[in-house]
Amino acid sequence: MELHELPDLSDWRLIEVWSIEEAAMLWAGIDPMEHVDVRLSDLKHAVSLLQYRKAFTFQRAIAEAVCGGTLPFVEAWEQHNDYDHGPWDKKVEFPDLPEHSLIVHHLTRVSQAAFMKWAQSKKMWSLKQSLQRVQSVDTGQECSSDNTIEMERTTKALALASPAYLDRTHPLSPAELLAANEAWLAITQNGDPKDSGTAVRAAMMKYLNEHPDHRSLGTAAKERICTVANWNKKGGATKTPERGK
Image (cartoon, rainbow, N blue to C red; front, top):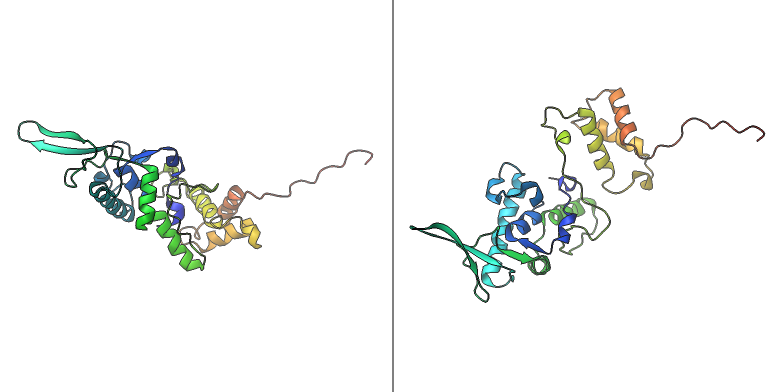
C-alpha cells in the first residue's frame, strides 16, 4: 500500500469523541464513514489485509488501555449475556473500569485529545505515519515523529478514496481516466514537478511510458491523458493586435 491510496480523514479532526472502533479504523487508514453500522470484524474483504490487521491490533491496544485505566474514557459499555435475557449492554459507571472480555468497542468512546496523547506516549504510529517512515528511508528525508492522525494540521489534504470509476476492477472504469488520475497522483507526490526543473507533460509521459499498467496505451491515448491531467497549460492561439497598435 502507498500513501496516495489512503482516504482523506481530515474531517475527523472536527469530531471530538471517537469510539474505540472508530479510533482503530482511523489509525489504520480506514474511513468509518465509508462503513457506517458495519463492525470492524466484517471488513476483512472490504479493506486491504494490511489495514485490517493494523486496525485489529490498534483496537486491542486501545481497549486494553481503557480497561487498564491508562486511557480515560468518555463512556464505556460492556456486553453481558445470560440464559434468560440473551445479550444485553451495560454502561460502566466511573470510577469502575470495563472488563476486557466484555467491552463493546463500537459503543465505548474516548476523546480525540486523550487518544492522541496516549498514542504519542506509546509511539503507536498510524498506518500513514508508518508508510511515511518507509518513504523517508527510501528518499533519505527526515520523518517527523509527531504522532497525529495526519488528519492534517497542514494545508495539504490526504488523497481521497478512489470513487467507483477509478476502481480498476470495476467493469465500467475507463482506462484513460484511470491512467490520468494515477499519473497526476504519481507526479504530484512531492509537489509540482516544474519546481525541480521537469515539465508537467514530460513527467506524465515518462510515468505512462514506464508504468506497467499504462505503457501499453497507444501514443494518441497517452497524448490525451497528458492534455487532460496537465494543469500547467500555456500557449494557445496568438492574439490579433488591435488596429492602430
